[in-house]
Length: 225
Ligand code: URA
Image (tube, rainbow, N blue to C red):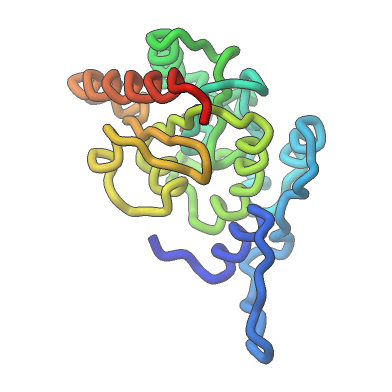
């Protein structure tokens, strides 16, 4: 995936990595004015308030509300989707539409619920007409997700769908190639599976999604390193 220098720097800063520029080289133009990393000591309530008031990208103008994420702050399973849709934007909760009902069933199949897992999205605001997130939107929002991951410290990340998988793994490989194996995001194992909205359209792929869930469950059952 092509990332601008600005995006790369925003991402490194969000991870707390100091970025050094060679002397004499001009700073690249920021694409948004307020592209700051999320403070590394921000707790849940500070993070929630920061997200609720976020104006880092133009999506704040069209949202009804931000969609922070729901679930157990100590979850073993962290589910990461793409972005809120219309229903999520109205209700302030991720995965509450038809796809969300299927996600609930997928979680139930591995002994989880939306209260025992933590469910979040790459973007905290709905893109108009449910279009794909723009690279600059996901890079501005990335620090919030990184901080959520640091706070939850899940045993497994389940990336649902192409957008989440590609952005988290920094690749443009298709889901069909990414699913079915174990990846890492830093120290945390990550498994990719199909988005429940896709599974609603292509139920014959549910068998593969089940295999992915079983792989994730096996990883969660491993003794902690
Ligand atoms: N699709 C997503 O990826 N996330 C949601 O919250 C809803 C639908």
